[in-house]
Amino acid sequence: MLIIIDSRMPQEAKTSLKEVGEVFELQSKDIVYESIQGHPDIFLLQMDELVIMAPNAPLDLKQIFQKHRIPFLKGKNKLGLKFPETVFYNAVSTSKYLIHNENYTDSCILHENDKKKFIKVKQAYTRCNLLHLNDGSFITSDRGIEKNLREKGLEVHYFSDDDVLLEGQDHGFIGGTMGVLHQSVYILGHLSFYKEGERLRDLISSKNMQIIELYKGPLIDGGGLFFLDS
Image 1 (cartoon, rainbow, N blue to C red):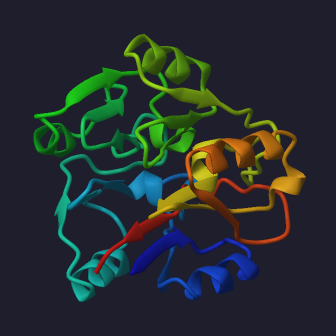
Image 2: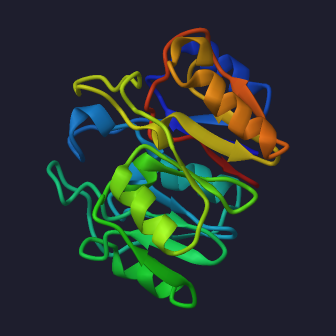
């Protein structure tokens, strides 16, 4: 198991994840702006059996994928320092749907997901704001995404991002605090620091899943946690 995380995460969270698999600490410089320079969801789109990676992603990220024999393709669009050059890969791909702002989706992502239904949303930082759960439902911190998914008949649950930390920004997004592995939702923080923590815990429990809190502190938007089978 390979786990991709932002290198700036608390050491306690890193130690907890090392009990699950090999942790790769993503970092970059002068590719995207500082707040998101280590965020997996900026550099990668995760699909069921494939990862699509920005062509100018850090070299060591490509090398760790090759070491673990994880299938990946390089996208067409290079990331840049300013929006919209930061959002080309920040989509959500499920077995049935591709969800993103179609104005910015990398063409490689479109090609590899062309058999899926495309759900168009305005929020181009889609994965930052959206987590897909095992039962097909979603958690989001964006009202627009919530509305779009409900219109498609999908189950989606809104949670505030007011308490989510992101260095250099007023706040982060709920999707960026979490990742899913099997029947567990791993979260960068402890729900006792989050005003909607008990409601979130109850929701996850109702899905026959468990929340694993990775450190004793506020929720941090780290660009998600990407769990990849070797």
